Length: 342
Image (cartoon, rainbow, N blue to C red; front, top):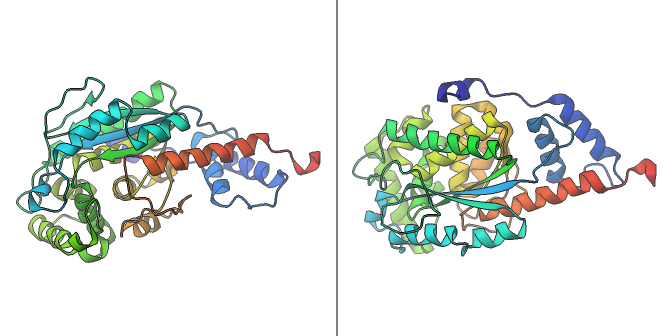
């Protein structure tokens, strides 16, 4: 399926399947609506999958890894080489994302779309668009064509997952400096000031004013078009954000539901929905991040999170917790006795 076809030909949810799912939930031996957002998620999943018997038995957390040139501006205490080190760590099973995935269980797929430093780990999938983005206070993050390639990487990943029978993907990322690029993207998408949307990320609260000033300089230099998500991503975004955006679009096109994680994946989700509004039916919010813009991004998407726990790690960790809750909701959906039975 071509990129343009995905933007304009995404399926609508199956209203019959949604009605049947709601009917089943209301008939269970519990108060109607007492499972709150879990019931909403089950109904939405039934509509997206086109069946009153929704299934997420096969799950994969996809961690897109990329570096950001803006780290040259001192916006984080973490060295850029941490991106490569963590990508290797995830591929070897040593991250929080891996621990959470094993508990579900879910697979973890680590994809390099733009790590700047060298490393040696064959289990990291190579889909490199470029070795890190440009410094967004000096130049655009990437060209429009590079952004398009990162988007297509995410779309192709969704198709590969669908071909393997995966029913739920979790959008994850790793990239030192990516809360700064996500803040820049969020400021443009939400029409809010850099000071409003910029949080501490990997640094302390004392570094937020400097980080917000960097975001402001980047926006003033690059002048991204609020009506053009690809322009926003290519000028002030990151390769990981663009790839996640593609994963959402591809998930909607190929029938793979996608769990949104935190700030960075939420910014990518809003880009995807601005590109193709029908993409929203594939997206399931896991939690409201502790980062400043998190709630506003979910509000703009019209989605309510399953968890509010002060999470801000990224990697797809919150998304995996959300997947576990959705698993539990489906267990109740299939295994709870009906009122008429008791």
